[in-house]
Length: 252
Image (cartoon, rainbow, N blue to C red; front, side):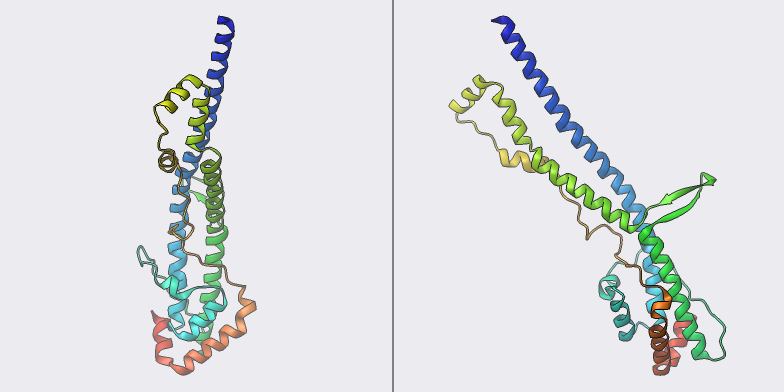
């Protein structure tokens, strides 16, 4: 009888150890992913401030006009949402000054060049890229992009949901109690049930808010050739309406 009891106790301990390992190891891995995500978000957010500065500079070159906002909206941007982002750690971006026979022509070329620069900046911001490693210029280091940030956040949220639903602390506690019928019966006789909801809530993970990642959503616009005629017409229209404002934007 003692041998059977010892075997049962060993089996219980083995089950509890395995459950504890699975429970805590999965949570530790999630904690590590969340900690790494903070660093990733910081890197992408810094690139986002640079990209946003160039976007704001392009809009300013278009005289911050309603026509400019309509053009930007057609490209998938949300001007009012982007303008509401706090202007911290902004970077000054100055337009190029190409040569042309007329002032209107110079303004048109500057607008087209600024769009091309903006597109390259946003492509780099969204897709990421490579840059020389400051610790070893012979090597290239990966620069994460906004798309990678969003994909990683969604993966982490899926893991958070899985941990919160499939590894509830109350389920583990209930299973542990089921291995000790005598104690379970004693607690039931005393009317002890425990605050299960509070336990689950206090140990659950909060999903990442994709709208609060401190990295602006700036879609990559189409290549310049696809919008060149529309943009050139917009630049000509703005210059005809307010040449002084266009010149001032060009010199900013």
